[in-house]
Length: 197
Image (cartoon, rainbow, N blue to C red; front, side, top):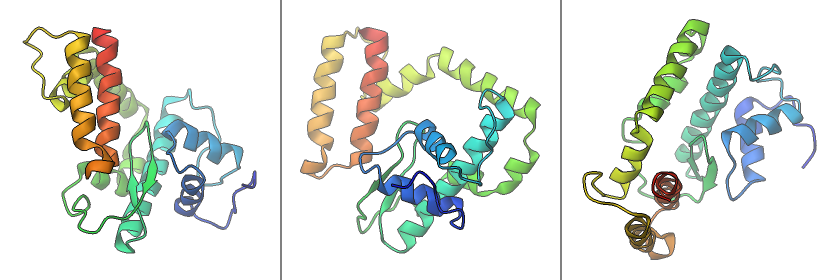
């Protein structure tokens, strides 16, 4: 791939080009770094340690990702899985209801008013809320819910690994499951290993 992106392409097309070159998926951070390295004019080329710059860069990227997902879905070209840890183009599957269901994140990122109206104080509040949830154990609770395990029961890594193998077997794409579900299971396992490992 060229070290330069075509400046005539909008951000959605530039992101699509990068995703096609990463069939196994790519993280949000890697996407931002590649856009910067290839001199995309559509994102801020400022230090991401500035929280407002980080928010604006993240917002612009996710706006482009949701626009791209909508377009790919409408043309039945592919399905775009969007998460900060892994953005991945997947084969189109007829009958996918994901876009028909209400998605508050999609609504948020497609409304550019949020980008215009969010200032540094708002970003500070968003970050504080995020860290409060993380420290409050929401990450662990969400992983346990995905594994259908009760945090009240005595849990150990052996029990969690057994449940992990059951879920992988049940949701593997080779057995009719979805790649996105399998990736969620893998992420939940990584989280639970940190708590019970």
